[in-house]
Picture 1: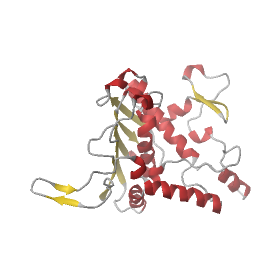
Picture 2: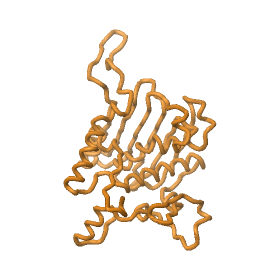
Picture 3: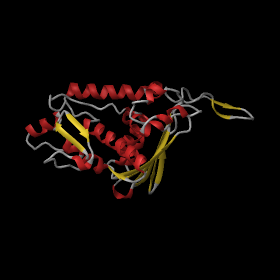
Length: 281
């Protein structure tokens, strides 16, 4: 898209969910002070079929990637390193798969500049419905989201007090408003020729975070995100691959900055034409 001069927007829909956006607003407005800790959980109502998990890239790439991106979105900066672990508790049939595809449960700790910590936990089954929550602890308060329910009705009985119905049980119903807002934002960017709110660079950063988590779980150690970026070899802007550090092609110089893997996007090119050099946003 960058080479063709076409706008590209990555569909990380949680950035457009009103609950998560309210948390982001609280951080930006310092309503809870300076951020100390970020917590995110993502738990599906039931596990996907074996055929979906096989070849899907593993739990960090096909599930936790959204939570990892949200941690970066809320932190407002690029992460430093990650420690991840995984296990299988729900669907034992996937234990024969490779890498993190054999996990249905996983957790991560991500370190950000300034000592900010982010903790993510994911599980492919939640008996009480689709569980998507966020919490941010600041030095003067805390803000947290709850799950989204089909209605606000509550039942009060001598043996039970609580919501009359379970949380939404599917991501399309849970994030309906987010998908609408995301589509509107992209259309407005096209019509008004303004920068997209979620760029290809954001998508690349989320993928790098997922790959680093996968590597961390496999090798049982902290993995820096720059380590993953340095292992990416691009023969040209359209053909990139991850290769072992000891088999780099002759003359190849690794980069620690994922922005160096991308050509300037259409909005950066326009900025340069307007009077400045392409910036790396």
